[in-house]
Picture (cartoon, rainbow, N blue to C red):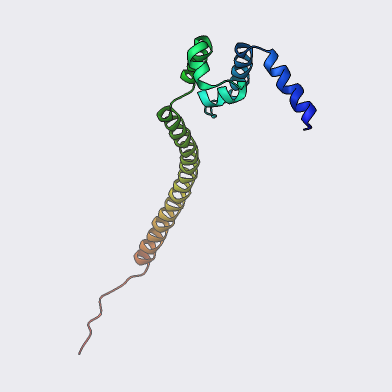
Length: 144
């Protein structure tokens, strides 16, 4: 930035009233704070408007009230933490639902395997019982 352009910018700024600069700075801060993540402070407003803090407090109460309203719209730190905590819980719930689905499929698989094995064991027990009936077993005395 050259010295002439800096002088022109300063001259343009001085031609505008402090109230106009504060209004424009508030619009900028409002636009910047759409997501509610950035801090809106008196110092930032004064820096953007090129107005001293004392001047803001003493001569521009409407701009100050507007800034306070903007600050009140933003969630507090505890509200932000609660929202983040809720979001983490939602993500965890989605992950748990996926795990529950997998667990249900696994339980279903093992239950099917259990039923199949039980049926096989019953069939084998029946076959062994049938074989024992067919074969005439007689007790044998063992001499020692």
